[in-house]
Image (cartoon, rainbow, N blue to C red; front, side, top):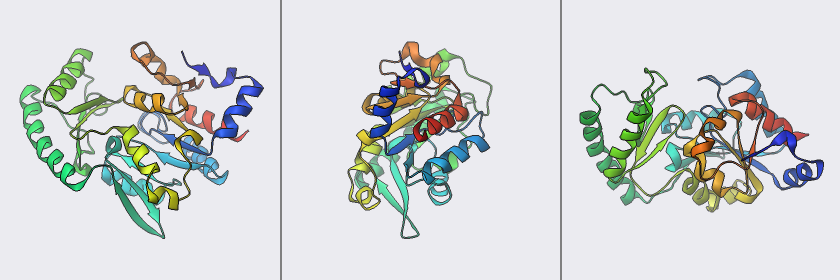
Length: 266
C-alpha cells in the first residue's frame, strides 16, 4: 500500500525532495477536480514553476487541448493522447515530438477507423468524449463524464472488444481510451525525455521527477517512476492495481496536487 506523504519521516522527506527536479502529472481528477481546474491547483502549478521545477502533464486528452496547454499553461511540455506525441514551446514556437514513426501512425489511424465501426455496432447509443473531434490517434468512449454512468461490466466488455481487435484500451476516471500502436503514457514520456528536444529544454531524467496520477491508466507510470504519488481518490482503484503509487496524498484531485506541490516546496 502507498505511504502517506504526511507520514514520511524528516529524513525520508529530505531524501525524496533532494532528488526531485520536476513533476509529471495526469490532468483529469489529478490536477482537475470534478471537471474544473481550481484556483488552488493552478496556483500550485505556478508555484512549482516559480520554484524552478520542470513540469510535464501526461494525459489522455486530445491534440487540440494539448496545443492550448503547451502554449498557455506554465509547463515545459505536454504528452498527449496517452503517449502518442509531445508538444512543447521552443523559441516562442510550438514544436512536436511524435512517439511513433510516420508509417506506424498512418497504419494505426487506418485500423482506428475500422474499430470505430465495430464499437458503434457492439454498443449502440454509445457516446464518444466531447473532445473526440480534437483527437488524432485514439478513440475516447465516454462512460461517465457527460453520460449516464455505465455499469462496470459494460466498461469491461468495451475494453475486451477493443483488445480483441488488436488495440490497446485503457480506463481513465471518465473514458475508455483505445488506440493502435505499441505505446502508452510511459513510452511517450520515456521517448521524449531521451530526445534531443528534451535535452535542449533542460529537462531532468525520469529518476529526477515525480509522477502524480489517480487511476488505472496511470499504473505504468506508477511502476516506472522511482517516485510516484496518487492523489487520495486513487484509493478506490488500489485493490485492483498490481503497481500502485509509492505515496499518497491526504486530499483528493486538485487539492491533492496542491498538497504535493506544497510538500515539494517546504
